[in-house]
Length: 383
Image (tube, rainbow, N blue to C red; front, side, top):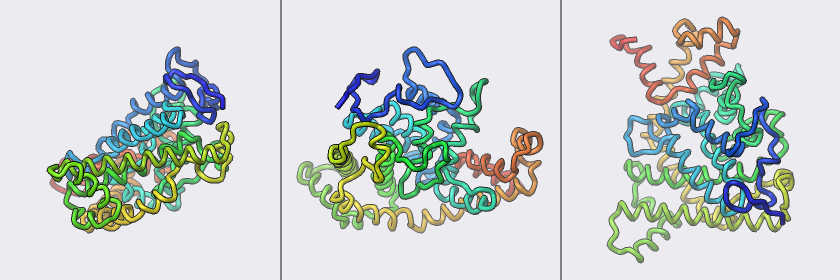
């Protein structure tokens, strides 16, 4: 198996994505003297306005619920850390992995999946709304930072990984130019798995801290109970707070270790020698073992029932849907209430007003959307 040394300081496997194999950028640019193309992608993502806004976008809890809980920004950083660990162990391209991890949630609406659901419904007659496709639109068009081209002009592989991001929440139509019939790179597949690891385990942390998850019920879930017993045997006098952190730490470690071992097994079993080999497979090559999937499923089912479907979370989601719908209808029925730059897109650039309004709302943070709703509907609020 051929190995290549890169600027990352470790040897890449033959099936890793290399800079030299990139399909390049939409708009030609000179290469940087000491940053790889995927490092440049990562840096452009970090410096984007959409990335900064993730600080005030919901993971599970609306931003004003408290400073402790995860936001889309902290979640993205956690995904990046987990993804880079897996990529390094598998000798894949860490730079591409990191860029994809940091970009994967750029297109999220305010109020998380509740916001996406209502925007998709409101946009049904105008192409719908999907946050993966919206992320692609952000990096291709909406970010305006360079005089020579729209968007961030990211590499083909980063753009492909963004739109092919797949978890239980994420499905999208793949544009023809991004090879819908192929699997994404192994680096992109890692980000999908890291995303699952991060939100499952960190949502447990936030759920316990908030009190929405009852620890007595959680202890009855076999995987959690097993990890708790291991910690209590080793540290019998540990406080409940530290015990929680140690259990979650072990859960993450178990999933990362299993993903690395199972992925190595599949790569060897299918004789994967190149990026092309990996992309031609019908199934994903980066995954958990069937045994681990089986033992973690009750924990995922528990999260769905006890946290994601908790009455308080449902109330927050329902309220968020009403807020977004009301803001949306005000704007499309009276576009003069939009900011001037948005009005110009409709009047001067002849863009569809529904699409302009949707893009504007999708880019809002939770806090901005709440403030905007108050300005539009509270008669005592200054506009």
